[in-house]
Amino acid sequence: MDHPPMTLHDGEAVTGSSPVRARPAVRRFLHREPLTPADLCMPLLVRRGETLSPVPTVTLDQVGPAVRELARLGVGAVKIFAEGERTDSGGDAASASAPLIHAIQAAKDAAPDLAVMTETCLCSYTSSRACVLTDDHGRYDHRATLDVLGAQALHQAEVGADILGPAAMVDGLTGHVRSVLDAGGFRDVALMPHLIMTSRMYDGCRAAMNAAPRGNRGAFQVHPSRPEQAVAVARRMVEEGADMILLEPALHTIDLLSRLGADGQVNVPLVPFCVSGEWAQLTHSGTRAAADYLPDLIERLAMYKRSGAAAVITYNTREAAQHLVRLPRPR
Ligand SMILES: NCc1[nH]cc(CCC(=O)O)c1CC(=O)O
Ligand SMILES: [Zn+2]
Image (cartoon, rainbow, N blue to C red; front, top):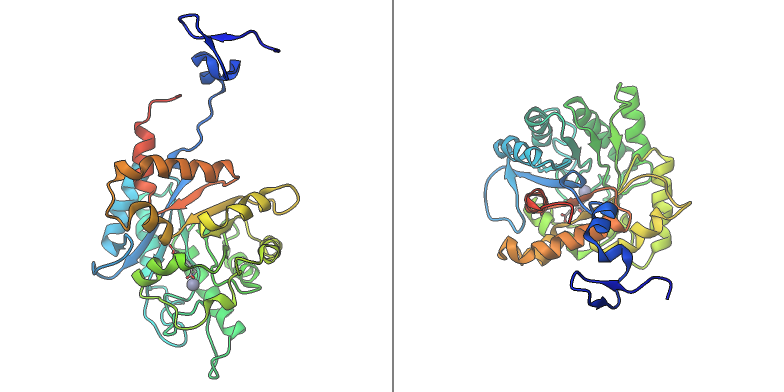
């Protein structure tokens, strides 16, 4: 044996222990926080009314108070989604007075130092609930999709959004939004495109936003059997100017998180999004007491960090942050 046997205070030998674990002073010396409130981002789904929803949502006038409370807890960011007017041509997606734009403004007014992320997508604005626009024959219209999303991105930047989230998963979107922002004088607005795997885990969010897809969203998202495609898409996003990449669903893309984070894949921060289905599983759709799921939640979030996440987006941000600020540390 390399080390003398470790003993507890009563002198009894401790088997299976190590010098690193045996003494509180050494554990304290080596302690690193696995997770802090600053690592977390809260998705805010903004809806017009308080009708029944399968996931937590807010109304526009609740955005300010919610953001202030999150900021007080030390939370790092919010990610704002909002339903707008729907038409075949993308409704008010490109309007400066869309609910999403007001919500971003409310969040920045409430806590200027908290990072505001957005979703830059069309599924909250199309009659079809698709993330893209289609032409008169129902075929994907690349030019029109990029035009509307570019205009939407500019409005998001104009009211102070810090990180935009191109989410339609179409080629060239990240690069297009980057060039629109640069031309508009917003070089310091960051891009975190979504790398989305097809999944049933989005159904709750889609229902809450009245955006259950009628068409085939899988045409653009990555199929779970194609990890090599996910790597290729991630690399292309970085080439086009992604500053970070969002991975969803977090729980079903942990393999990608560690794979992409490994040397030589992509060199940008990776941010898993624990989507609505993950919230539903953990909280039994909101019926479970926080005290019952908090240990699981904290372990889960720490696991994402350990697997290479720069930060984590979770609907449980508030409970997690409240729990973390109460913990004695180091432990
Ligand atoms: N528009 C892409 C997008 N943005 C957020 C979610 C899901 C988020 C959640 O379930 O919490 C999705 C997936 C999808 O629409 O297919
Ligand atoms: Zn979308």
